[in-house]
Length: 68
Image (cartoon, rainbow, N blue to C red; front, side, top):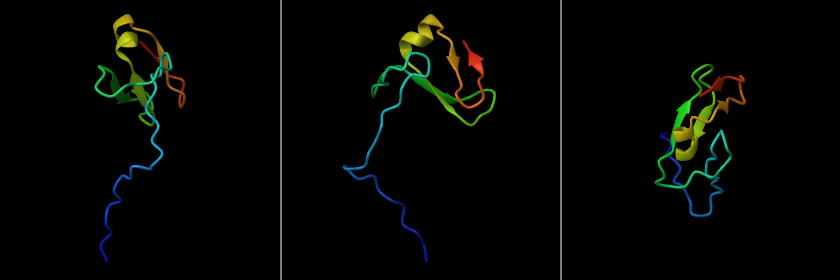
């Protein structure tokens, strides 16, 4: 029996991502980026436009890697 993929419901609890450096909410259509941690590859790093431009450091909560 094939499984049917679950559709997202309007009432699902969705939390917007936060910038790993400053903690701001990442708004839709903003110029933020996200990528997996370059060291462990297990945590998704989010960076807002301001922190990217200012080269603010971020720290992976999983492995402690610090990046520019």
